[in-house]
Amino acid sequence: MIFFLQNGTNSTQVMEIQSILNKLGYYKGKIDGLYGQETEDAIKNFQRQNGLEVDGMVGPITYKALEKYILGFTFYRIEPGDTLYDIANRYNSTINLILSANPGLNPNNLVPGTVISVPFNYNIVTEDAKYTYNMMRLNIMGLLQRYQFLEVSTIGQSVLGKEIYLIKFGNGPRKLHVNASHHALEWINSVFIMKFIESMSRAFINGEDINGFDIKSIFTTHTFYIVPMVNPDGVDLVNEGLQLNNPYYNDLIRWNNTGKPFSEVWQANIRGVDLNHNYDAAWELSKKSEEAIGITGPGPTRYSGLFPFSEPETQALRNLTLNNDFYLAIAYHTQGEVIYWNFMDLATERDREIGEKLAKASGYYLDTAAGVASYAGFKDWFIQDFRKPGYTVETGKGKNPLPITQLPQIYEDNMKLLLTATTV
Ligand SMILES: [Zn+2]
Image 1: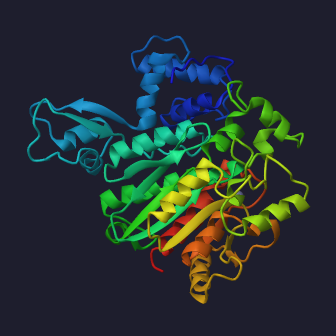
Image 2: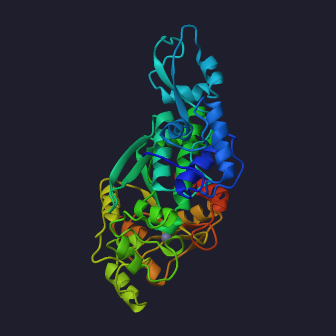
Image 3: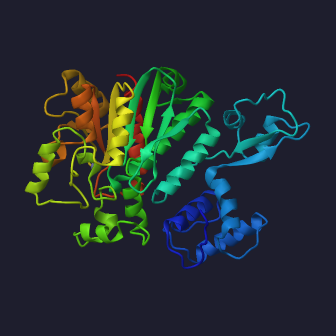
C-alpha cells in the first residue's frame, strides 16, 4: 500500500501512524486519525532520529521505516564475534524472541553473514486505535514473524475479497474454535483475540504461566482455531467510513435507512446480510422474525439473507467447522457480559455446566437467548449440527461500538474464560 499522509489528513492510516509513534515515544497526543501539528512534529522527530529527510510528511520511505516498528522486527546480518545476548541488547530484543523468530538458529554456533530477524521487545497488537482489516493484517504478519510456531492460513474471502484469516495456536489433539466480529460494530473483540494470541505466544516461548495455567502444556494438548475477524468488509465500513471505490456504494447508502452514520449502526456484511442470522439453524424462524419487525431486505442489522449460507463469510466458517472436530466453539460478540448457551433446547446439561464454568471464570452471566436474536446464529448451528458445547459470549457493557477503553477489562475477563475452556 502506498502511503501519502500529511498535515490535514484524517484517516485510520493516520491512527495507525499515531499509535506506533506513541509506542516509540515520539507522540503523546490523541490517537484520533487527525494529522495535526503534534503528529507532524512527531514525524519530524522520527525522521531526524532515523536519518530520513525531515519534511513532516509520511511518504513511502518514511512509511517503510515506520512499518518496521509496526511489524516489530528488523533484519540483522551476524558479524564475527557476535553473541545472541549482544544482539538482543543492541536491538532491545530478548534471546527467546530471537530464537523463536529464527527456529533453525544455533545460539552456540552463530555463522557470520547469516541474516536473522530480530523482534523488538514490545507487544505489537494495536490496542489504542480503531482496528481495521489492514491493521489486523500487519499485526498477523508481525506475530507470524516472531512466533513461527503459529500457523496462519485463510479459510475464504469476504464479499470484497479480503482474507478471512485462521490462526492456529498449539499442536494438541483437542481442537477448539473461537471467532470474533461476525458483527461489524463489535470489532473490539478482534483486538482482544489478537492480544490473546500474542499473550499466549509470548508466555509459550518464555515458559510462563497465565492466571496459573501452564501455557506450554496447553500448547501440546490443545489447538486453538481462531478466526479473529469474520466480517472484515463490515468492520472497515464502520471504521473507515464508506469509500468511493466501494462497489456497493449506492446500495449501501440506500440500505442504511437509519439516518445515522455506518459507524453507529452497521452490523451486517457489505451486502447488508447479518452474518449471525445466515446459518442453517431455524433460519426460517429468523426470516419470520425479521419480517415481523419490518425488515424486508439488506440493511444494517437482522437481515438473514436470501437463503442459509448465502454469504462467503458464513460459508468459510461452515467449511472450517465441518472439516475439524471441534470439542467446543465460542463466537464473540458485544455487549452485555453474558454467555448464551442453548439453542431450541438441543444443548445438554453438560453444555450448561460448561457454560457455568465459563461464566464463573469470566464473571459473566449465563443465560439463554430469546426472540429474534436466538435463531440462525453460528452457535445455534454449531449446537444443532454437532451437538457439542457452543457459546455466544457478549463482552463488555454499553452501547455498540464499545470504546476501546473497555479492552483491558474484556481482555482480563475473557483470558480467564478461554483458558478455562481448555479444562472442560
Ligand atoms: Zn453481535
